[in-house]
Image (tube, rainbow, N blue to C red):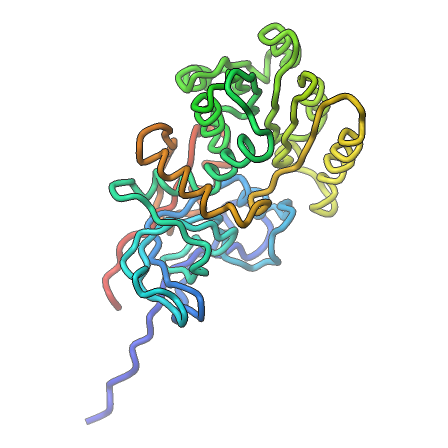
Length: 347
């Protein structure tokens, strides 16, 4: 009788960005899984976020993206199934959240144990992942970058988006008044969050801001860049802070992917030395790595307590990642698009 026993090899599904293009170029493949390395855990992914960063990466426009091909996926929520050398076995079976920057669009992912935050019991995985990158970004910009206090007034550009909607809620929770820009079709949702909406497509935004807050505002959160960046600076009152955290307006640009950010950095440096009592700063999600777990845990606790709500627009199977990315890129959704790996029988 021929020998038929073979070593069982674990495999998992993952999504690959093979080269620059549109969502249709994404590839779904199976790969062999190796165990977690020292200091790592293996997480079975329950939900992975789809973000504007991936839209930029696919077009080669994200400032810190790896070379093609690679597995994208900025954040995840899942359950720890294996632990590597030097990792507390008490993590086995725990539901955790992590910011990975890349690699989360997969069934299973090895993650450094030091990057994890425990997900509170009863919190839905899709709701939780919608608050990982977006929630920490919003929390740190509000409390660490701008240091917004009760009674202050802030402007949130893109107030109906993933980061913007959490920024509005956290600012309101902190006792601030909020003005939010969004397209007219999304104004009802912005009002429901507690902000005064402005239609950035059909209204003069700086003029409307001055009508609402004649002396200017205490903080502006700008993810767009481009020509309107100067307007954001001019909206500030003395003592105010402009926080830049992206350059969405340059998505269709050409040349080196860092080029669109240079004018932003140059203006921030210039404004930082002007003696006018205003401040400008650039935020990126790893700016305060020592506080990341603490801040993520805080955001997840607020979510579990019902003090803030994440906005999940759609949950789409991992194998349909191209559809999910296309949906986000279309700008037709409010809130987070989430990929959900479907349960698979043991092979």
